Image (tube, rainbow, N blue to C red):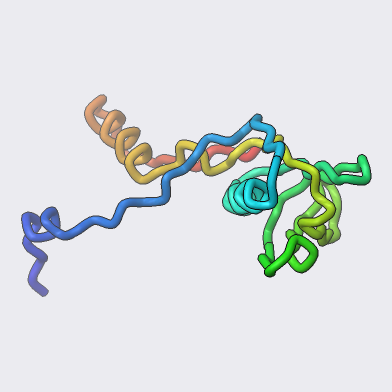
Length: 138
């Protein structure tokens, strides 16, 4: 088996990755339907818990794992796993007042470039059997 030409690999077109926004701790108060939809899309991509404030005055905190966007707010919804509960909850967009990114974003700073940088720092320091383990979620 012939190894690939490294120079040719370096010249390959590279597709830019997803731009990760650091949302942890931010509150999203939607002033319009468009802003609400934008915030909920960001919440769906967020890898941590969010707190959804409902128009009824209640709130629900958990991890958004699914969403359906319909033509109206009434036909759009998010599904989430409430924090510390073993059930799924469905919330209509029309019931949502706002949301906050309250949980730790487990994906923040977790890029290939960050991993590679840590690896080479350890390698240059003379470490052997380098093993980079994932951080705990707590």
